[in-house]
Image 1 (cartoon, one colour):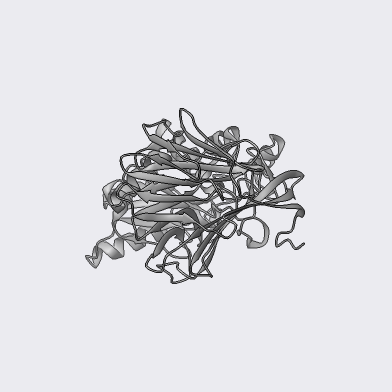
Image 2: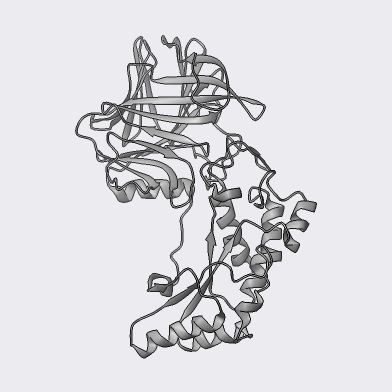
Length: 429
């Protein structure tokens, strides 16, 4: 038996066919077979929540901070038979094959949107990660030749339609994982886990979604068919995001790096003198005296020692300012040592633990808040993957223990809680 992960594979537990029982409950439909339970909950006419795993149905992760609200039970109809059963809303149908346990998703008009593969549709491999017994789970769908597949976040691979590709879904520098895949047929799947995951369509007729550390297969099925409708349901799940202020949609000037507040003024003055529109100037790294503390380097204060005054001059020219702040702290900084004392640093890193609410509060009070008080207009929250020692940023939480739990479960959640913590404290202030 082979295992592709640096973990101990305890057992291979592919899904067993021959579902033997199906029943309706208040939230949806449960199908039980030999050693596996599949539950389909109806959250809205165009939104379904599917959870499948050994034993009783349960979510892939104990905590889901990426979801804004739980699934709300919605109206559906159910019809059962000896070999097949059907769950229906006004927009969607789910067909349950009671011979082999496969699911097929259709529109109300009968168009097949996605159907599970007839070749081991679901699989659960037992793994031991960070001392916890979990599953490496995979879900297989048959993908017809006419579908294009989009989404997945922001990846530096020059790909728009992901048919025929393999994509690692793990936060890394300049590579942003967002586990939502959208089909050209008007359906979408939100892979409901923060674990490192994989989108695998190297064999074009088959789409395989894999999570490296989970308790179960867990995903939401969304249907438009219009893209705006898919986005609506995605926002219902994850939250409705407000627009930025108008100035944030203008032209930004940044470089690596401005070495003083005086240089910011000179750049803005040059733009105004040349009558070139400019909305924002960005202060990149090494402005600090010691990374992790809110004090400026002595060199940054020469010859203009009044940063607040410099920013006020920018505002008089209708130029906004953004400053780069990292989640990483220099071990010589005052804040790092205070965070260590309070247990707010992720073991084996110089990063504060953004999954800890108390650490997020301290990060605001001791670093972001004092910088904001200097009259900066915004923050470039750099290195929010997070990055750890020696520039590593690819799934670095996988082998860590964090406040939220096993880092293997929550590998991708740091950027959300880090940026969200700053946002929430800023709004509250």
